[in-house]
Length: 406
Ligand code: C5P
Image (cartoon, rainbow, N blue to C red; front, side):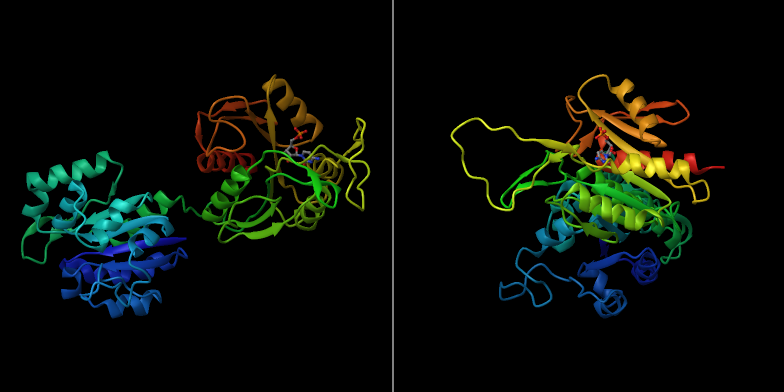
């Protein structure tokens, strides 16, 4: 995952070097952006050496061209889109004021306006500046817009005064960053196998049967599990999504291929989440040559595909010596959600079915949100509100941990 670290001009700027080291322990790729004032306190070279990335120090070169250390003249947009989080530490009263008022006079303040990624600021300044009503108002405005503020600590300040204003401890800032990114370690040591996307069942060399699955739910699950420290194997049918960083990505096409990839990896998996919209039927005959148009009406004969989830459930039930994995299935329904989910839970011998009514607004295939109810093998039924697919993924993983408790 990539974050931008904005370093602004305060004495605490030297602590940002240590912060970089701490954040690298979380396997974060860090793009440092320094204001001009920050360079009075610490050099870009320090951060370039620590991060292995060029440090961005200015918006424009003096001759009007993009500066040598910036890839293009609109680099702030490229960085804004690429990062998962913007952290500013230390954040001076000045940068907080610019953020609060939308003033975009340099690279960092422009980046703040241009990014949709979450923002964390760790202010550091003299106590009177921190307590000034202007700063208070600016911080309150930023908080109300969803900016996460790591409050400064109290103690001796560089200016000789005692009070609030020292940069928060490196560890507190790192923990806030992890919490906002959803980086936890509660799946460390576990392997999570996820299936995603649709399958394609060939009819002839140019035609196939498929469905509207975008793969977003499965990819969100893979990403959430990676962030929580799991080793993730993502078996994916054809989608338009980029492979999530940090997961082993196995692209497949048909149900049969998906079955092969799942079976290859299921033995090492502690958790198997089948989010793929697997075809239930496929053409009984796959034509070796393109089917010709025939004048009259034709019928397609379909045969059932193997039910991968049911197979895993059956084997797990029969083979008591195998280490127990948690099996999670999905059910996309248009009616009788609860009955069908319960029937699936039993028939597929799964531990949990995440069911959604795909006719509901904000639920189902193509969107970024989902409305899901979790049906558990002990009979519990947990309705979740409309949430982002990433948040739904985390709720499912929370329940998995709960099921794993002895
Ligand atoms: O029976 P239905 O297709 O509604 O079941 C959905 C669940 O079963 C999903 O978790 C899906 O990934 C899985 N499934 C499967 N193999 C199939 C069909 C569905 O693993 N052939």
